[in-house]
Each structure stands twice: as structure tokens, then as C-alpha cells.
Image (tube, rainbow, N blue to C red):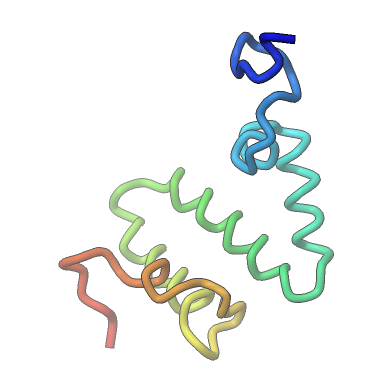
Length: 101
């Protein structure tokens, strides 16, 4: 019909975006994170996601140390769970932030 392509209105199933299905929906998020944990080569991505959520909940004063730990673990070649699929732009420190030696 005429309204077939209209989005919104609160109807379930119309939004097929990753954010809606795997971030905003608790069941979808849980299932996707379980998939990442169990898939060869994707466990680091799942761990990074969990750590980023913990970072978002952390106190402002703890964020510097937490960011450095995240960079060492996930963004640095040779890190414990290096996520080599991330772009250089995604792993670059914010402007004005010094890299640890």
C-alpha cells in the first residue's frame, strides 16, 4: 500500500539498522555479543565493546588510565587482544592527548 515505506509509528521490525538491533535491543545485543565471544577472530571485538561500555560508566578521574589500558590492550600491535581491523583514525588518541612513552 501507500504507507509501506513509511518509517516510525512504533511498529516493531521496521528498523533494521545495526544500532537498533544489536545495541538498543537488549536481546539482540546479548545475542550479538555472545556471537562475537564465540567466533574465531571476533572475541577481541566483543571484549573491546564490553571495555568501552565500562569506560563510559567510569568516573572522569579514572578515564585517563582506562584509556591508556584500552590502547595498550586493543589498539597496539602485540597487545593482548589487538583489534587489527580498526582503522588508524579509530585508534588515534584525541587531539591534544599525549601518548604514553
